[in-house]
Image (cartoon, rainbow, N blue to C red; front, side, top):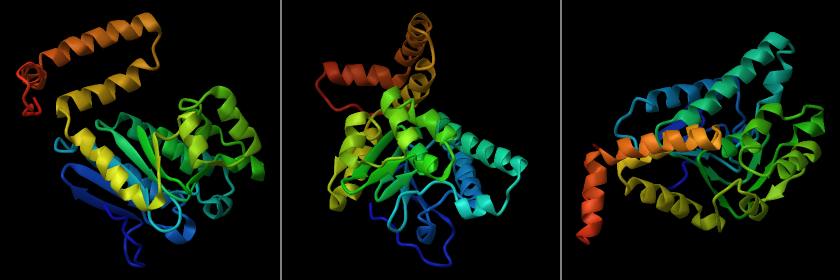
Length: 266
């Protein structure tokens, strides 16, 4: 997968589709792909459409230019100094993040350069993240007098509370290797290998049963918010239903027969 370069007349969100993988590329490189109102609207529209796509196997979010995403568009925010505007803006952003969580297939962040504030939130919200070794991450609103409250929701669900609070209170940047050790990203690779690593991960997911992948995406997000007893009760029911799928029978028969399974998606 090669990262597209921005062209002035192109839309702010680029769409690409190949082999069941949808790639959404934030296309405001001069603004480090800041999440303007328009970008949030475009991303929301994309995820609303993808939610109904039965052929979809995986989604990749990338950024054009030198950065993944620098967070909210601060110039646009300062141009609208009203609480009702800010309430609406952060509600839109929160809805988008929840749409990513509820997307029926895994969402992978392809991270290069900066991922700051709501951009770091976007990484934390995605199911999986692959970063180039030069990537850096921060929730740095505290440096301009604004605690990154909404990014804190996603960040604190990815990494240990004390590490998350450290980042939120100091605004310090962490490098890709610390993001990996903290659990914010899954893999770190040389920058030159980033596209290949994202493609490889997406291909691994696409090689699995579509039934199992979609079941797992929905189940994992839901059970993690439950207590232990409730989670096991829920998980047992999901697994029993999954066992009734054609793909589960085919997969087990293929394993026992020492052959490659042929998935039907049913």
